Length: 257
Image 1 (cartoon, rainbow, N blue to C red):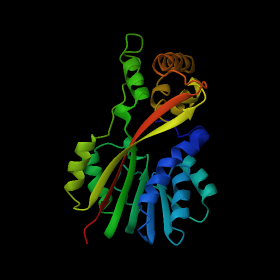
Image 2 (image 1 turned 120 degrees about the vertical axis):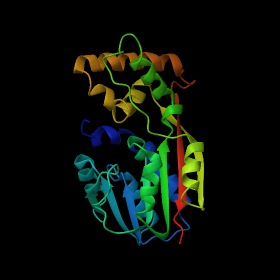
Image 3 (image 1 turned 90 degrees about the vertical axis):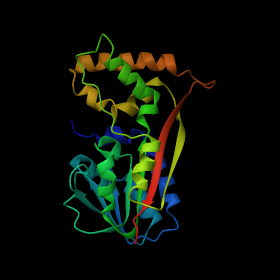
Image 4 (image 1 turned 45 degrees about the vertical axis):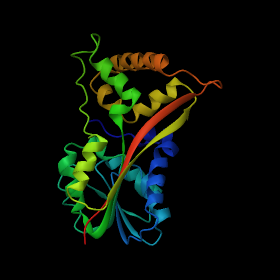
């Protein structure tokens, strides 16, 4: 996997951070003393948590040194550790009152095993709070999947395997280890000035895995095909902007006392 590029990711930082703010608002009744920001990226979600819980000790965890460098610059008052959320998280030797994860676990496999493992990081009565993009339901991910399977690109690209479960499946997983949980879905309507902006959004996330499999020239050819599909499926609004809908799933679960 290629290195994460904080500069590319941060081009749409305000839009990417909005779900973290919304999730933190749902947690306003809590008073956590120790918080883990799992998959903290460049620290935008960590900053949200620092603002929401000014008295808490906050630890950000990510497996990208490039992202952690940016996070330490953005949030010098927080602590940061290089840890792989897909592993056993042995780097984390304490329990937390809140484990918060914004747009991270969609990159990780085996959510049926992952979520119970994350619950073990909590103190009794602690809360797991997660937001993940609903990728299977997003038109751009459908475009990418169709292109990868097309005659032009078939055999040249390995299709991405989506790790997300359905909302109903998450319900069943959560009910297996928590009697106090909730889920909700939100569709964000982002304002994009043009099609290139949508391409740039995905260069920082969903396109990375495909572009790293191709030469630079072939990669730009693939991006051109994505651009052409965007023009077919997203029609500009009257003012010329693109209405870019982005569905996301949220859930919270409490560890029993």
